[in-house]
Image (tube, rainbow, N blue to C red; front, side):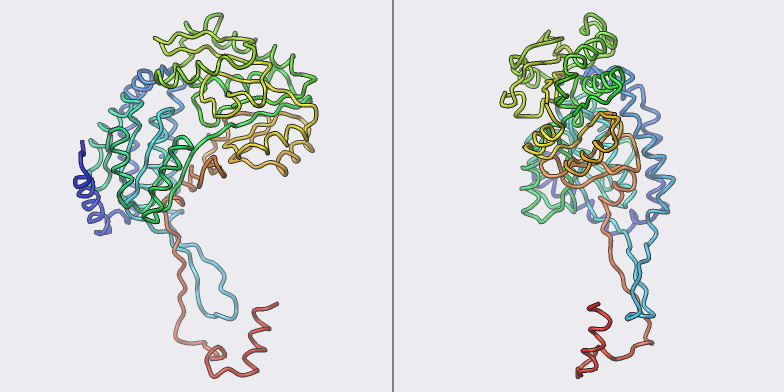
Amino acid sequence: MLTSNYSIASLLDKQRQYFATGETKSVDFRLQQLKKLKSAIASRQDKILEALKADLGKPTFEGCFELAVLQDLTYAIKNLKKWVKPQKVKTGLELFPAQAKIHPEPLGVVLIIGPWNYPFSLMISPLIGAIASGNCVLLKPSEIAPHTSALLTELIRDTFPSEYICIQEGGVEVAQELLACKFDHIFFTGGTKIGQIVMEAAAKHLTPVTLELGGKSPCIVDTQINLTETAKRITWGKFINAGQTCIAPDYILVDEKIKADLIKEMKKCVESYFGDNPADSPDFARIINHKQFDRLQNLLTDGKIIIGGNYNREEKYIAPTILDEISPDSPIMQEEIFGPILPVLSYQTLEDAIAFVNSKPKPLALYFFSHNKDKQQKILRETTSGGLCFNETIMHVGVTELPFGGVGDSGIGAYHGKATFDTFSHHKSVLSRPFWGDLNWRFAPYSEKNVKLFKQIFTK
């Protein structure tokens, strides 16, 4: 373990020296490293699932969601040669015969700080883009998911030399030491409060950041729906990983005319998914630690429990819970829930629902259920969120070519697919012109003819 600023600084110096050799810029080298990472993950699939089970009680099927990074690696390997090609742009007749291109180039040495809720995939996913872009990388996994952190450490150290990709386990003190150093980019996934600390630290070095945060992602439900499918998709999206998903539906806003029907149908879904006693279900995860458990337990006092409400602190278990009779001013509506508790509120008009959502910080995701295309367009036009799903929850995160990220309080920047490559690249503008074809109109001494020519070309 690194235990001092000096040792961290020494490691970063070695990474900068290695980056300066130019080896990481080779496309063949990048492809080779992506393939090595893919092989290392593929050979450890069972161990990864075991670590996720140990940290979060993740069902095997939900653990497999994190193994989808193998698909991300396949996509990057397939498309990297296309991504690195300089992109031509038009120069205009006034610069003929010049050429202009945008050249993507690596940033240098980057820091990736991971979260505990999806502790494997949300470390590997940005790493894929950092490798593809040609950077050296320092990884800091979450100490709150210790089994996954240890597995990631073993995987990275067995696969890459530390001067190229290094991983550092540790708690708050290690994170503070890392943030005191200068990196060429910082990629952070986690809560808004820690995101503010990361951004403040980065500002001292003018380091650019990508912040993947969270917030209260609303789920608006119209009357014009397939009730059964709506209930199935919301219930699934809320309770996977025991609600510990940054884009989980945080609360429901449902038209008051169908509120009772929706709650009744969701209650059926919870029983169908997890049985009469979800504590015995192999398909329901656990809360990450007692600190989070205690926070969530306190939220159970808000409103009326329709289903669930049971808990066991020793097992870090909180049942899938649906709450009714929630006041918009109650504590549960003031912070991201990040657990298996779902408040249900009602609205009279869609305009009321939109006004309520817009009165809150911009969410990472917004979900709207309705057959009505005009209402869908109204939601699209009149709300702002990192992502938007019509008649679905969560699944947009699985579309490789859709950039994923927040807006406002829910985050800065985006990634996934080529967007991850772009996040860890500098897009250098390059103009090239031969020593012929110059008309000399732009050089002094200026004349009235020069002014007229300039206006004709540039001010139309």
